[in-house]
Length: 95
Image 1 (cartoon, rainbow, N blue to C red):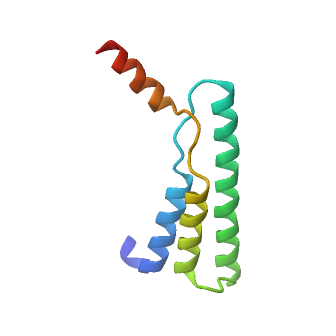
Image 2 (image 1 turned 90 degrees about the vertical axis):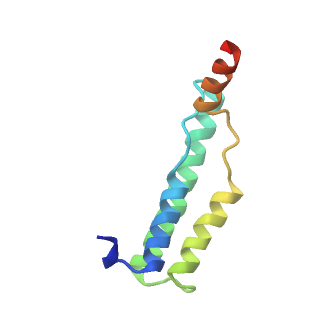
């Protein structure tokens, strides 16, 4: 199925997936609020790219759009405590 898609399109889809792959927050109000804001920002970035691609307004091309998503994702990394961190901490405490 992916043979039907060009390398730049596959790269863009991968960048979209990476941008939206946000770890679950720890179960506390601050982490959940930060998670929600981060997800909303990343969704906004992805929507912007989709809109540009569909409208044919990718000034730098599809590769540029994929790079843009990766840059924006790197600028706004996960800073909240994740659920995985809490679970790891619990496991370390049991060891």
